[in-house]
Length: 248
Image (cartoon, rainbow, N blue to C red):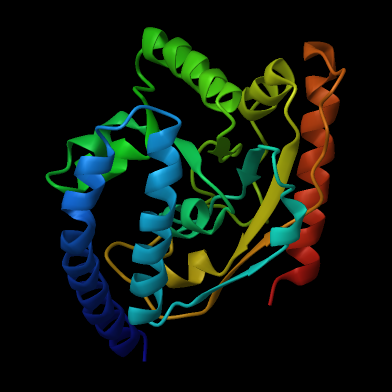
């Protein structure tokens, strides 16, 4: 049985990869043209393109995405959106389904992939994690993104969760960014991406519905860097409890 599952998972991974490339080719030129625009206009125009692309791609690979809590996002307000991170599949689920334009902090290495790299770069703030200068520069760019009224999407666990716990402990970066900008934090919880594309298996996928739930935002107005540890712990507890109570 395991052998059959492994074979079917690899066949499905090939299908999903082919569908990704095929649909990507339709948006490649529009995204390249849009990438020439200055921010924040670029983010505003890119978002509906990414949403349309993933709105077609995800059902094509039998992984439809449903969203809950869209009403948590208030008109005229932008947020530091924080999400749990279990799989590479979190990326095409998160940014397109966040209401309104957003940018995410992304690894520099991915931008070097032919064709896809141009799309990846257009909607991201790139960082070379091996470079202190790049990390400092990315922090400034995140602040600039928030000042421009664009949402910022971050994964406070830092990397994919490959362990047995519901979530890994959070790093300070997302909370430090929100406090400095005095922007509210919008917690979100993604379900089932680890079932679709497990971090512990190589080139293996399976179809499964995916959900993303946005929870009540937490304000940071008046908070200082001294409040970051408590803020981080509060958000971790909220998200972990929600994940445990709603996971199916």
